[in-house]
Length: 342
Image (cartoon, rainbow, N blue to C red; front, side, top):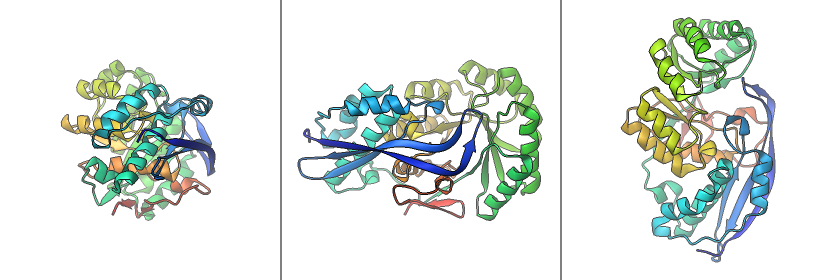
């Protein structure tokens, strides 16, 4: 399978309302759908959706690479992972493009072999996935009302974005949400690396009273994570710090974190994500799989990854409600805070 015809076309998804974090205000998402066709006529498609604020290349960098791309690939379909890893290593600096190429190639191989992706990888999938709801920067009263609606919709875990310029606004938002919802509803917080070590220490000590499941990316460096773990009772999770298998290995083996957040689009595809899940679980670190606000096609990889995680942790896959419309049908809609895989 070495003669492949490649086409790509750009897409844009609009959010119904901007989703604001300490790093960016997301109003639209732009990406590319990559299509590969083999000599036999089989087709595989993939999504490349850059999000540079969270660790990928820019849209322009991806477009420049993809416009000059020539696919000359020999794939041993019986040993496809090694073939793909070798070919895709040229795109390690372009994780979203690598994700799109990998997804298109995997789908093409699956279609050639007439198997599903999970069958191709010999994965045992969980029947259902728990999903968290996400709350961006809102006023405390708005955030509380939003949280209450999410709980009514069946979500049992809420992820709250923090990292405003004035921490009192963060504190009041979490306090307002916790007051509005039952104690058994889990709250996880995400500062997107906004805080210094000292700020994170002081802020997490104050937030401990709200029974926080974990604090995601409160600081940035591994040394700060290691130090912060000694200063807070709130478990820590790394997200933007995890850009590759190598960085994941450093964080996991340091035991500085209790959770590792994995975005297939930011990691370069399904294969590296599955490898990090295996590494994390072997070291008693809980993997949490999240979307990068990509299309429904791109989110399929995240669903597959989340469905092999052994515990019933909630994953960050509930983003479809933020879009006005999508370019693909959502094969895995969130219903009552869960995704039914099969």
